[in-house]
Every structure is written in structure tokens, then in C-alpha cells.
Length: 182
Image 1 (tube, rainbow, N blue to C red):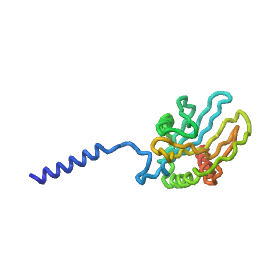
Image 2 (cartoon, rainbow, N blue to C red):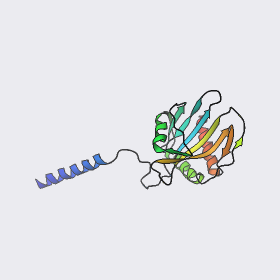
Image 3 (cartoon, helix red, strand yellow):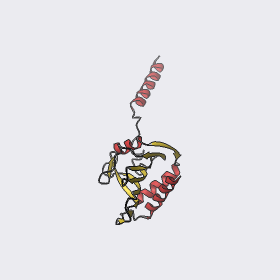
Image 4 (cartoon, helix red, strand yellow):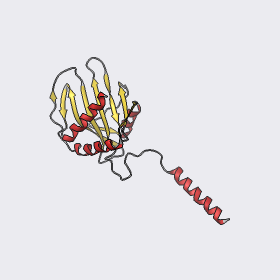
């Protein structure tokens, strides 16, 4: 009789433990590192002859979400965006029929870890009415990685051009541009 009660008690404790553990994704991996929580984005915007805002976001898991002129989109302010707003923007997007492999994502996480230390070149005016094509990475903010992401510009072309001076940034920007062309 005691053996049966102990088995039920053990089973009950395991079930309670499973039920009380969080089922939500955390913004950091098991090691506490935030280097694998980068969100990559290719974005085109032009407001010269109407409103045009389109592009895609690649999540840390390699899923690709496309967006096109979402009126309630939240843009980064002063180079920062809350995790809530970033995830909300993704929820306004449509999941593409594309998945980036874990191995490929790991290589771009490593490149982004280096690129985040790069400075931006001085912006150069190239034209008018072309809009802006921007390749960027949203990087967890060191002071508050659970709630805030820093917007890391890799490259911007169009009316104004600039680029991150780290060579790794150009590799990521080329990758994002190639995904855009698929």
C-alpha cells in the first residue's frame, strides 16, 4: 500500500512541476546567452508617391515572415525597439514557405555578434524618391536583453546610403538581399 501511495505522490509532483513550468519561449537560450536571439530584417520603405513599406523578418529559429504596408507597424525609436513591439510586428506578418537551417542561422548569429561592434559610415545622399532598402539586425540590448532590442543597421541604400564598417555586416546584408530576391 505504501509503494502505491509513493508512486502516486511522485506522479502528482511530476505533473504539478510540468504544469507550473512556463510554456512561453524565453528571449534567451539555456546558456543565458542572447547571441542566438537576433532577428534579421530586410525592409523597403518609400513615402514619396504614397505609402510603401515591405520586407521580411527572419526569426532566431529560422522562420521567415513577410510584411507589406502594415499600418500599425511599430518602428524602432532612437535605435531601440521593445521585444513586445518586435514580436507584435512579426505577428502582423505572413509566414513564408521558407525555413533557414539551424546551421546557417548559427553562422549568421556569429557574424552578427561581430558586426554589432561596427560603426556606421557617414550617410551619403544618392537621390530622391528612391526610398530606402535597409538590412538590419535586432540585437538584444546588453542592459535589458529580455525587453529591449537594439536596431543594428548593416546597410542602407536608396536616397541615402550608409553601411556598417565591419566586413561581417556586408556578408549578412548580402544574405538578406539574396533572400529578398528569392
